[in-house]
Image (cartoon, rainbow, N blue to C red):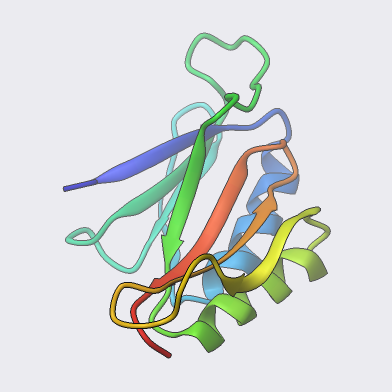
Length: 129
């Protein structure tokens, strides 16, 4: 259902370095450049993508209160790896990896962090370990 999500940045070089390192953890790479600076990352055109760019109106990029991008992981270990990569890339932790609620078939295992522009992200895995 989701084709892509776009987040604004005020520093394309810093954001590109962060997302190159972070999204490589889940096998994503740059798919195309954005016209005003930035890139679209993904695993392919047939899967959800993430775009990071200077806002179209050229006003300062600001994170939305209550806005969050969730990156689906294939395992709890991948959630841990995504979070560890984010922290190593300088992201502030907004919640370490762990279960949010009971374990089982509908378990939610997630970890939270912010990118260099303050956008909140979550890496998550649904289901049992």
